[in-house]
Length: 110
View 1: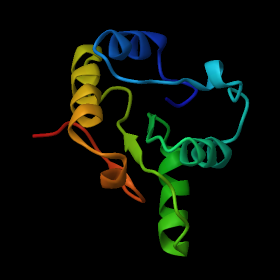
View 2: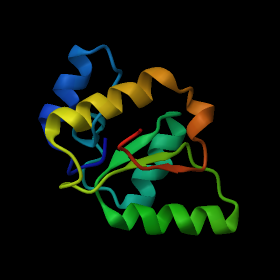
View 3: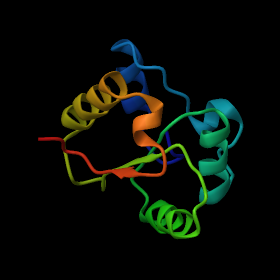
């Protein structure tokens, strides 16, 4: 999870069996977006964010051929909380980390 993702998302996903880590738990809450993306890559995790700045960082890395484990991006008002959780659970359980490498996924899935 990115720093600003509401805690209820993480709690609900954990109740559904999704392995989630937040920057607050990882001690990285004050890190910059590029550093958080590096940390997610180091941990072999896809980063969920509602921050447009991470889209810029992903595009930069894609254009320069720099590796990252992937981003799931959705603006805050794109879905209801329940729908966000449903979509994130689906992505977490249906995909393998390699499926997300160097990409940005945009829920909702159809």
